[in-house]
Amino acid sequence: MKKTWKAISLMLMAMMITVFFAGCNTSGGEVSVGIVLPTKDEPRWVQDEERFKEALSGTDYTTEILFSQGSSAKEKENVETLINKGIDVLIICPHDGDAAAASVEAAKKEGITVISYDRLITNTDAVDYYVTFDSLAVGAAQAQYLIDHASGKGVPLYLYAGAASDNNAFLFFQGAWSVLQPKIADGTFKIANSSEAESLKDTAELSRDQLSKIIGQVTTNWDANEAKNKAQTHLTAVSSDMKGDVAVLAPNDGTARSIADVFASDNAVSSFTVTGQDAEKASIQYILDSKQSMTVFKDVRTLVTDAMGMAVDVLDGKTPETTGSYDNGKVEVKAKQTDVIVVDKENVQKELIDSEYYKADEFTGL
Ligand code: BGC
Image 1 (cartoon, rainbow, N blue to C red):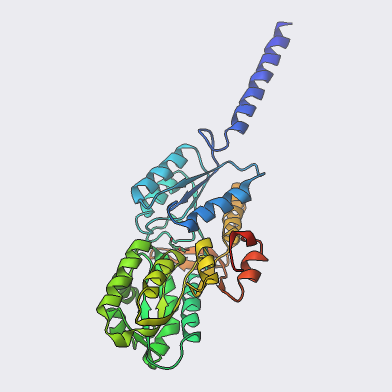
Image 2 (cartoon, rainbow, N blue to C red):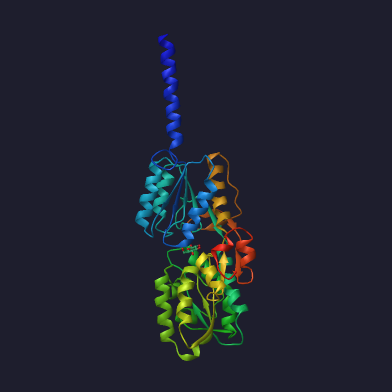
């Protein structure tokens, strides 16, 4: 009799423990996959969070998503929090590619598999995998759009770039330069706002140092306000032959909208073509309203599926599939890469609405 009671109470206790852990999805308990994103202040990363949540709903994986709010210190704290929750896989999009090395090295010490997400973590061997879009193609597509929409010779060209702490900013600019440079050299474009770019206009392939010099001059720091201030300063500084019909390389949608607003408010600018990236909702509306020319659509659903697919493979003891590799300054990181799509007024419907990325009623003038 006694033995039976003991067995029953042990069984009850085991059941309670199981129920307790099953209930601990994202707070306090064991977490198997930790996800760290750079900031909630840009729609791009809120989009990623939403897409992760969609992909995870109904699955049994215990995950937790933390934001670093544009601070490497906060990012380190987030990674430590997740390490303490026992994660096996860390999916991390760094605020600053170099600074994040210390965080992932701490994770690596605990045997955690590190997946660099969208932005590469640089100068460390503690990154196992990288899931990314084709960032050189992003810049190349922006540049090609400017070429396709320029007419005649001597079109003033305004160059802007992302944050120098983000390896992608280099890839975007490098991709754009590879396409624009021959058109600068042949006089189709004349550079309006960068003496560094001007002095390198005959150099087809830029070194990292040369890219740094140009980016240092025309960086937006991925900040819409900084982009706006720079654009204002540039338009104030140039002579009238740098106005008229102009071309603007803006690195992403957030900066494109604020740069576009500045160009739109200058009476001496008669028309401008301005690029973007991310297919942010606000920019899709800008495109429909003819205030921004194009965006490069990066389907975050694919990136999320690839990152989670890799994480699940790792949890299952399998080796994730990769399609190439990226040099992060220290090691070649195995990577899975996704293509990008150019979107302008002509194909918004097909690429973003018909593909069910967004709903038609989120926009006016479709
Ligand atoms: C991302 C872009 C984003 C930018 C600013 C880049 O690393 O690839 O999609 O617009 O960061 O957050």
